[in-house]
Length: 235
Image (tube, rainbow, N blue to C red; front, side, top):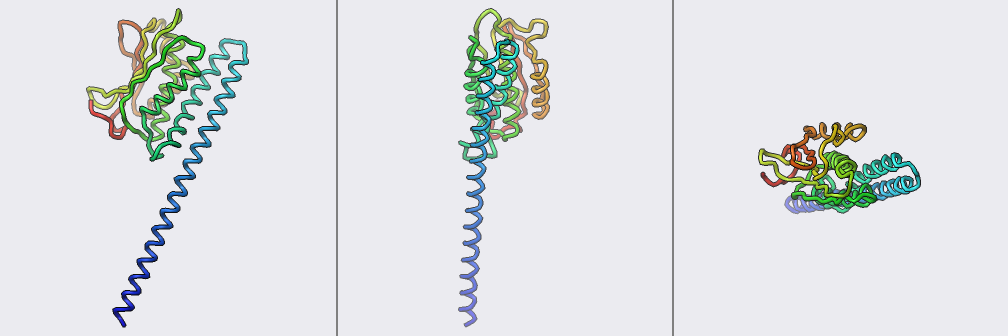
């Protein structure tokens, strides 16, 4: 009788354990689905706000106002693309940086470069990072590309290249470069609100914006430590 009671008790405990594990899995799946829905709704809402800003930019006659609204729309798009990436990702805690930057550049082609002749390209290695770091990277890229489109080619179009590549000295290099007029009276350097955004985002990544020497054009870049990324390829 004692052996039978022990066997029944073990069976009861096993059933309770399995039921508890099943409830935990259900709660986890429910939380993941809810988070996916939140990211989807946030991405859609931000996309709607971006569209409204774009419509407002098209409606105002002043060139300076159009430029400011276009930059605002690009900043909104950077955050919206992040939430869109999270919505389609298997792990919402991290972001595929290459895919995120590619989508961001695609959005910039339709917004900032819509009335420009600059050609935007992206070349990024495969790596992942956390969502908050991805926001910082996206905002920096948006400001640097916007700045290059605005100042690099005053007399015509050219190419603006975004690169994320291994740094031979360790970590990664995030760079935006062009073949334009170069820095003239410091105007190609990111200033104003854009400069403040880049500075704040760079500090959050433990780095700062630098400018490299080129025979032609401008190269703005940041040195990023390898611990900012997950599975980043070695230099």
